[in-house]
Image (cartoon, helix red, strand yellow):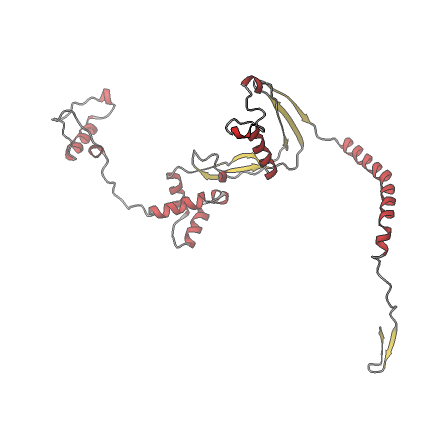
Length: 278
């Protein structure tokens, strides 16, 4: 018995429905049994013809390990990954590496950016977190704000500043990662403060933003004035500091002076018949 064609309901051609129905019957589907049971092998596709995949599962895992190893592995190109595998005796091309990574869900995307933290800054933040958490009751002496309510936190103002460099590109590169690996450590690139054209300061609270302030860059006249004032200050302080240093270091410096040596003289040598400086 063939099913009735319902192209309007299923949006599938009748010939396609008949072909699927025939394959299901050949796979053991029994339409006359109640309740009707459709098992996965009744509708699964037949094995596709063609050359089997060249790379084995072990090779794929080696590719993933090279990429996930550290931050440098995330930045490797497909050619670099293929070259690293060739050193291990695995022959694979860069295009095959690209296909394997793409099939596994990896995309070459920009790394996540965040400010860099020194060990001192990490310790300070950890201490602050311990002082503002309620999950460690034995640290009651340190938990100064553990009982703060939302209304209390509304009175806190958070501030920060950042450097802005005009027409400056801080570098554009990409890393291999999946959609859920955005905050993986090897996928993050820290932002470090460097030369800045001007500084921007801002603040925000619970429900408000601002105020903010932009430190304008110095003009040529302001730089010249600052240089002039520094020279004037050095001219006033240098003689005083030099005299103070001479008084405190003069006795120590006398013992460090090199002693005079013997003055060299010209000597006549009978062996060579020449004057020699000795």
